[in-house]
Length: 199
Image (cartoon, rainbow, N blue to C red; front, top):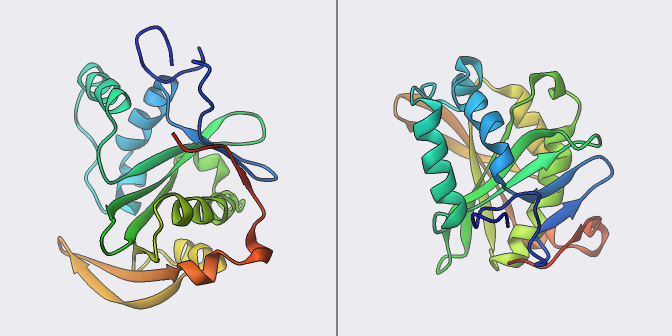
């Protein structure tokens, strides 16, 4: 934590969540991510892939809400930043709408750095993220929705073990729903990442 109580590079002596792969570090969100996240949320092309409208809020208002979420993260979700091998923030991955009684949650990822597309970063991040969230929240199933025309994303999710289970229409958009189960992820041969203690 920084002096203002927000996560950042200042450090608090508390071991943060950290998941490492060959090229990536998945770590807790911090204040320094705000400018990247704002740029990605206001980008029309990225918004199209997320089936939402680009954010129209000004940065000062966005930053105020961002700080609030860092201090008191929204319930039923976990969002981690993804840094590449050079320590650059390139993506975010998240598990949200976590339902503890039914032991399931929805997965999402945004590779905001377009120069990092089609390099396997998304697949690598998700493969590392899945064992962590299955264990942290004791989930039995993780599902996701991807636009039916986004074949690149579908191929990436299939590489991670997700399989299509149906079609869904939400807000006028057509999605492919995909899922993966706990038993498919938590196998001895898939324990390829190291994670710090959850906080």
